[in-house]
Amino acid sequence: MGDFVALNLGGHVGDDPHAVESNRTLVADAFGLGRDRLLFMNQRHGSNVVVVDGPWQGEPPEADALVTTSTDCALAVLVADCTPVLLVDQIAGVAAAVHAGRPGLMSGIVGRALDAMTDLGARSISAVVGPSVCGRCYEVPAAMRAEAARISPAAFAVSWQGTPAIDVAAGVVEQLRVRSVAVQWIAGCSRESEELFSYRRRHRTGRCAGVVRLLDPHQEHDAHTELDAHTEEEHQTRGQV
Ligand SMILES: [Zn+2]
Figure (tube, rainbow, N blue to C red):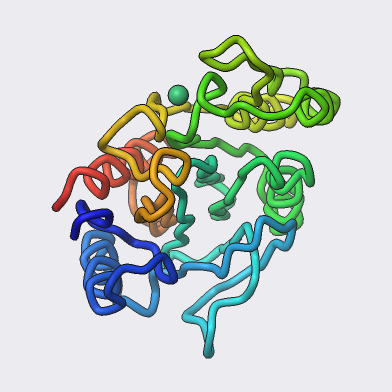
């Protein structure tokens, strides 16, 4: 409640662990899965990609991208300003959830996740990029902006005050487009929208989740249906109390 109202899904942020676990169970239920098959990672702002095909044995691994070929688990990425990226090749049957903040943009976590998916047979990948802090709201020192723009020119931004800023999501979207990934970008700035958790707006806050699950290839679904379903799920997750 309070700072964590509206379905906080993040552990280790000061919320009641039982409330978080009960919220995570609600999301697992919505995907028709047992709680142990909704897989979170121990996000580190690093560049580690983990391939998984079932429940964690023990603690979740330190990673900022999860990749699976299993239809029996859902992958979750937690955010409160960072960019959540959900990737799927429904034909090849490969999905990924990626945590892409500024460090992830710089280290190329999205590219690493795409590489891991390609290694597993993915050829035509689509992405849903969730809401995150926008470029206007992410003021940084000029040198940091220059460094980000060297990695991804689209990350170059200007803040509401007219000072140097970084648009992490725009940079991530550019990294996806360079790899020929079809992008669906969901509108919204976490700092400006009260419907989203934002660490920049309020340090003690919850986490939203982007969740992706592969559908059984024997069922009649195409990639768009799949992505739309996840988009709806993401909205639903944020909207519930
Ligand atoms: Zn903003």
